[in-house]
Length: 119
Image 1 (cartoon, rainbow, N blue to C red):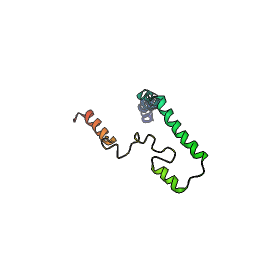
Image 2 (spheres, rainbow, N blue to C red; image 1 turned 90 degrees about the horizontal axis):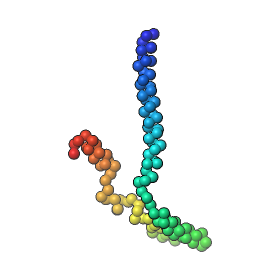
Image 3 (spheres, rainbow, N blue to C red; image 1 turned 180 degrees about the vertical axis):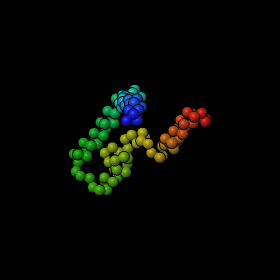
């Protein structure tokens, strides 16, 4: 019986420590999105202009007769999709415009090299 009492007394601080760690992880995971708010300040006018153009095209398509398959394919081949066209296509990440980008694996390996001092 003394073994169980000893085991309980040893495991109680470990259980409290694990509880504190879980609470800290939950707390910081809830704070991280709020901290990311200040990372990028966009101009509200940018999005409005793009949405107005997309809305104009959508209204045109809604008022007109249904397009044929060939017309839909031609419009879709211009960009992302039929309505959006090539709006913001230069902001999208594609193989053509991200040749010089570092991969996540490279970033992690660079970070590990810095942490371990193997620069």
